[in-house]
Every structure is written in C-alpha cells, then in structure tokens.
Length: 102
Image (cartoon, rainbow, N blue to C red):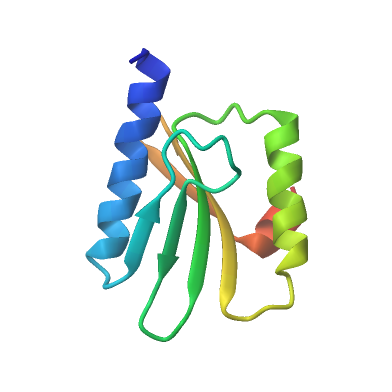
C-alpha cells in the first residue's frame, strides 16, 4: 500500500466514523475510482455524496466530474454533493453550491 493511498484511506475512514457518530448510515467505496468515496444517509432521508482528498491537489478531471454531479443535484434539496479536503491539519468542506463556484 503506497503512502498516498494509506493517507487517503485514513481520511476516508475518519469521515466515515465522523458521520456514523452523527447517526448516518454510511458506505465507503474503496478503490472504486468513482467521484464518490462516501455515501451517507440520515434518518430523514438526506443523502451526502462525498469525495475525500488527503491533499489539496485535485486533478482537473476529478473536479469537473464533481461539478457535473453537483449541477445534476443542484435543485434536489435532500442530496448534497461534497468535497472534503484534509490538508496540513486543516479540513475544508465544499458543498454543491461552493463546488459550482470553483
């Protein structure tokens, strides 16, 4: 397991546990190469589709795919598309509105 993969795995697990602790039902999609790493649903039917990054360097194609997903669900109130970036001890979260403005 390379260093970057281990770091990403660590933060995906951290996000998963954070959401479980807030009563979300959570699935992690390891190694899927999809734009979504974490799918979380709360007891009210709210869905969070989350891409987790352990660094701020995001490939242009990955960002474009997330923006397209955010656009697709822009007017769906119970679906949120999010990008969580962990960089040098900081956590930055972009929701679908913020993603569309990147």
